[in-house]
Length: 99
Length: 336
Image 1 (cartoon, each protein chain N blue to C red):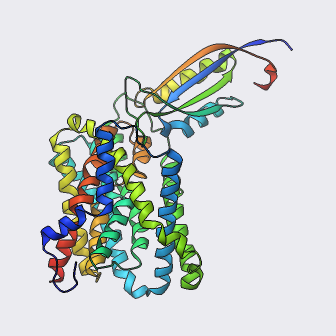
Image 2 (image 1 turned 90 degrees about the vertical axis):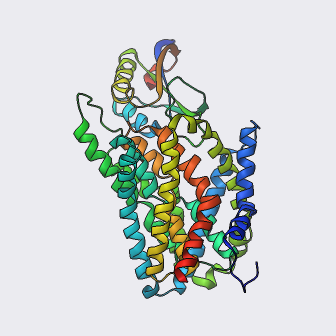
Image 3 (image 1 turned 60 degrees about the vertical axis):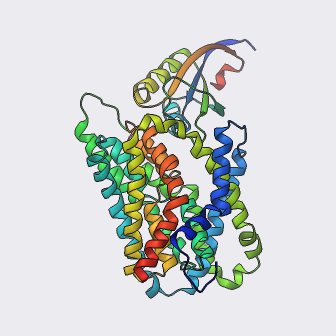
């Protein structure tokens, strides 16, 4: 099986957004995602978690076009009022048809 | 505490200060202030809140099965009236006295219109210790007060937001229908309402076998939960300097006003001294579990530092330490 180049889009956000971010990602056509609870602090703290530094990390494997689309959509809908960051990195996957 | 002579105000305050609930809260604050790493594991905190809310619902339901519709009708009406009034009065006071912008005021009003279940439980414990146990149907009233306040304040906020919409095309991350669904299906609502229904259906006889588990451990579990609340509240103390004196002042004024009004309405509705105290406390308390996510999603421009600090770092400690004994005192005066 050949290794194929893909993007890993990572979103680190205040926990309250997690379900609505997942809906956004799904609606753009991503086939899956991974969510984990993480802790950390950023420059524009607006979090309302009971634990102030609580964050969620959402990871999505996508091809370059979808990755771009996801990032643009999140920037448009959430950047103005919420605390979150989004970045993409290059990864290699096997079984690329899964994504 | 002897039953013959009513306790003087100072004695009531002292009895409250030396209660395990207030002392555990103080320990939580102290631990946080000296930067101890103490914190309840997240899962234990969640488990305790499930236990407390379900126990509260079950017992309330069992007692509801014993009360008449007649007895609960007026108190229920008074509660609904409070649920509609407090978000509006909070909004106007925050706008006029606090001079907060309309979105921030609406965000905070949603918190003051809703209710804090932990404060409610603390008031129940306090009145029971004073020998003035509140009516058994109080948890039913708690569920009535939980959601109208949030919705009214969010509606005010949404209206103001629509007016302010200038060039900023940002829409809330969730629709109102979704928010309503989330409030009504939140863990606290399911446990409370579900517990009430189970309690109502099973009655005293069905409750008997599970009573030891849900009652013996209740006060102890509450102490542990409040310890964590102390840590969480103290975490917000650093924001007190940022939010300013107006917010701190209103965080104390609003519960006193709403509390006194709640006690008065409870008195008129025919509640006992304990019942009127608990209703006053419910009106005075500010939600910090149901309201924050709802406000964050529908009024994203409202500054969370304001509403969280006001409800968690100002109003919650105030009610726990001074508010509850004060509302009890007002109930005593009214009953003459």
